Image 1: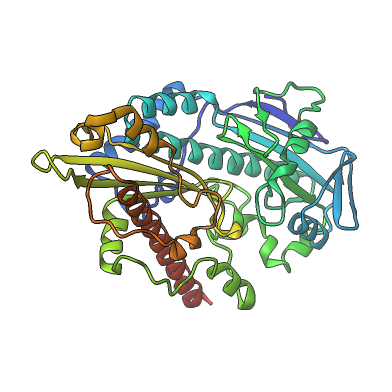
Image 2: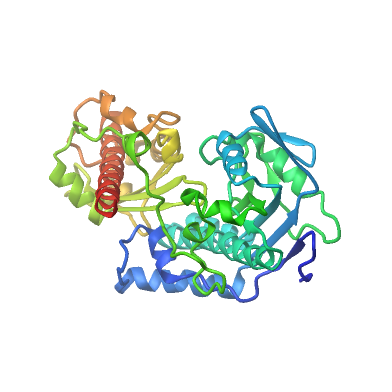
Length: 422
């Protein structure tokens, strides 16, 4: 690794990577202080061990040559970006420069997770995916801590990072940011990273970020939202001035806007007691670094004939960030690992390929915000099987309503905590 210099540029791999257990559990969706046991602990330990042996995490950081804030945009080394939030942060802190940072968990974990999914092992897929997300969070946090140490030596301060896809920064600008970052000076960019026109990165467990840099350290003390330490979870830092605040405190209209993205008084087609039980027993959710949400729902039912054979299906749903209204980005339904009950369904016996293609291709409400499930008019169906479209829609409705219920519950709990700490 290169030593820190007056104008910083460094790159390398993280040989010793210690993802904090509490951060991993948070991304897995467990409450603070929860202790894993049984199958969940086995999976969590497996994912951590697999990554320790096979993962190839990396990072890159470079201070920009120039920063210009003009009109509604900012220009970094002559490349213009439009982000109201980033622009406001830089202006408030009177930032004179920015540091471009890229981190990645590597392609190995993504490839292994894909293999686990193909082998019908969704649990291993889920835990490894979440651990890779935790690695990305750890990398950007640890890199930020190292930048803070360098800035401290030069009587400067590093601001909390911001990335395309965050509120008020269109993810479509990510290709320009990646191209800018690859204009390295004295070190090579440490990994192969591609970006689609949509802004999605490959490998997907990769993050591009911009850290503001200011000489006005006294000003940050008056701007509580910009205190770097309160937004940094790096525990062993020698330069911490304030405790880590996991969720920035919101007040007034901002709090109302943030907490009412989902209908808080939703009328579900299923009673809330059932939704609560399913959310606790069948649903797992994790929040990614970009704010998107990965959810896995495990459905259990029986066939309508053949002595009522038990069957299990896994539903995978990816939602966009809360600030975007939780748009439904990806959906998939597939038989659970080891399930054979689906082969006893009537339609499967008649046309197995046709039925499984239908189950795979149907993605109701894809592209719409999660609130849309509350207005989705579905034909009533109590069948446990997947033979008819109505029964498949019915189950998708239950899955999406359970996710909606769980997210509303989490938001209400967060609002309660905000109220109690004011």
